[in-house]
Length: 294
Image (cartoon, rainbow, N blue to C red; front, top):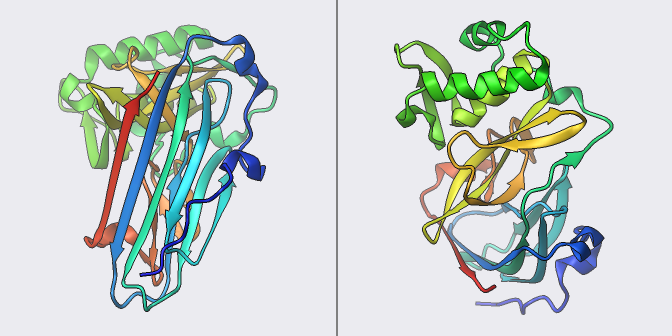
């Protein structure tokens, strides 16, 4: 089987991902080496397209030593919104086992609120999985006479007091969240208590979004989402249950078309096999490992 050599240059040198000079004044960080390995054993596939999420690059995450190998036909870095993705394409039918391996070092700094002067209306609207009607609007109306900051605190307390802990956790699958009295609150794919907070804020005309990525918990990478709320001209990150864990932020790709794929979130590689969604195939294996090195 033909094998591509490791790329000789870092992705940082392509211009698709750039570092920030804000790191110069920051000393409190952790460094992790992350490796991702993917194998697709599709003997009859003519065309495979894979989109692999990479960490957001900003004032609290910095990537270096990026290495890539595999028997793909082509590759490039694409950016959707502020989210970098590695796009690889396979068009050689003679190679039955398609492979992709990438690794990089990630410096993780404490999260810093980001100032913003222009907020898109997409962070206020209802979408397929961010509902602002029904029970969500009913709860939001309870705080209608409060300031924006007070509303956010009210919503956090409401969720902690009314949503059972077993209902609050993140799930990649479609789930329904109900309150202590079994009333329907929110349903959808890749949702958690933080999704409720985002929905409540949008229902109250407060810009809000979900950021998807991995919590680092007990030497494991655990898929999760967090809420980012726009208050006082800054994005404030909030997690109802996991505030003290390190978090690797990947993207804000909620209700987004990536190629021909409509996605509810993005934690790991997604793609298409001859135009069909990769997630419906079992013959695709992925393994993500990490190690803290500093």
